[in-house]
Amino acid sequence: MFVVATAGHVDHGKSTLVRLLTGMEPDRWAEERRRGMTIDLGFAWTGLPTGEKVAFVDVPGHERFVANMLAGVGPVPAVMFVVAADEGWKAQSAEHLGALDALGVRHGLLVVTRSDLADPAAAQAQAQAEIAATTLGSVPAVCVSGRTGKGLDDLRLALHLLVAALAPSSVDSDVRLWVDRAFTIKGAGTVVTGTLPAGQLHVGQELVVAGSGQRVVVRGLQSLGETVPHLTATARVAANLRGVALDDVRRGDALLTPQRWLTTSLLDVRLRGDSAADLPGELALHIGSAAVTARVRPLGADTARLSLNRALPLRVGDVAVLRDPGRRKIAAGATVLDIRPPALRRRGAGAVRAAVLSDMDGTPDGLAEVRRRGIIKAGDLRAMGATPPGAPVAGDWLVDDTLRADLGAHLVAATTRYAAAHPLEQGAPVEVLRRELRLPDVRLVAALVRPPLALHEGRVLPADTGPALPADVQRAVDAVRQDLTVAPYAAPDANRLAELGLRAKQLGAAVRAGALLKVADGVFLLPGADESAAGLLAGLPQPFTLSEARQALGTSRRVAVPLLELLERQGRTVRLADSRHTVAPRLT
Image (cartoon, rainbow, N blue to C red):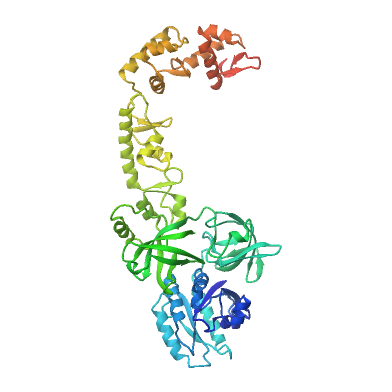
């Protein structure tokens, strides 16, 4: 299927032309038919003699309904531009053409209507000249008469040539269906319609409503009046949705592939049309079927920052229209350069940003994005429209190679500073280092660890240095070790530890250094005491009581109870239902 939009001045015969081509009435509202003027979008379709199916989005031509016109043209790849022979080029002809130029539409066809009422040559010549100066370039022209039907066969052939020149749509792309109508059908529920420019839809598919994040499921699909289980782009779509009320979806919303899009209310753009400095401070931004208010901050001669009053799902390379409703003028086309731009807080930041944007053309470039941002998630990069240039270094995080080398040097320095400031701690905690290096994820700290650093139990420490303790702490620990050499399971009590100056920090450092084994709070033995205790207990008649274990180890209940609990956690012993213990079979 191919989708073509109409464009042109009010009452130049756009809807009449669609009726003659399709045999369908594109004007949906009784008021439209009564006034003989299209107010909202109309839709109709036909088959060409050559076999293609063409759907038409018929747009209003009156200046008061330009927003509706832009909602219809936005997602459509080709246009049928209509000019009446007896009236020629008019104000809305120019504004519609300006909108098409701003959107960068490159495929079109000129139709000169009412050619039975006046010689169409003058209208055709002027229209082709005006159109040639835009992105549409040189377009073919067909002269027709709605009253006599003359030229309709030529028009059908021209439509065939127009759609045959369109590039095939990407059916593997993520879905972004801009909603141009939303209504309810009794017994079915909420239905939305739109033009699917890329990707595919199927019954049962889960989508998300942009902005609200509400999950919906495609309950049914129709296209060109037929119920279908599956659709591929490009296509006109009517989707019956489960999971959303009519009040929660409207024109300008979009249905998206979940977790594949980023929404933004702040973006940097390149302009085509009026210079950035000449733009008013507030404009209407139109993209897809959406229309939002945008505050404009000029950056360079042709670049600006836009602040939207509503977040939209956008990607790098998207093209939008900036319209000045007060002057009823298309001010500029806007190509999206960045949907996650940096804050501009410092003096001169705008000029610096303009210099960066001058090298960007709106083509998604994964490698360039990683270089500019330094650190970014691969998923976010895909959601911007770019392909990740390599594998993530940790989790889903990509890191620029140059930044990664710099961060590695900073990590060494930060670890060294921490060790000097906290001599009792064995290495710097990764969370502390994450904050100092301003990294978004602790996993990135681990990914940066290289010799001469090592990662051990959530701390980063120099790999080429053994566990060292301050001299006074080492002397106190040596005294404890000497006591335990005489009585290995007679852990020093709190008074003895205090006498030696071993408080919580010093004891923690000794444990991390491997000089002592912590059995429980206030209970410290020599490293390996747990293993030797299990060997001694294995020599007892099995099972044994706590009292028998205490006597075998030559220690007190204060030590024996937590030591048995430690051995049980290690799987060296098993506590039975009668509170007796047995050594695990592998140790007996």
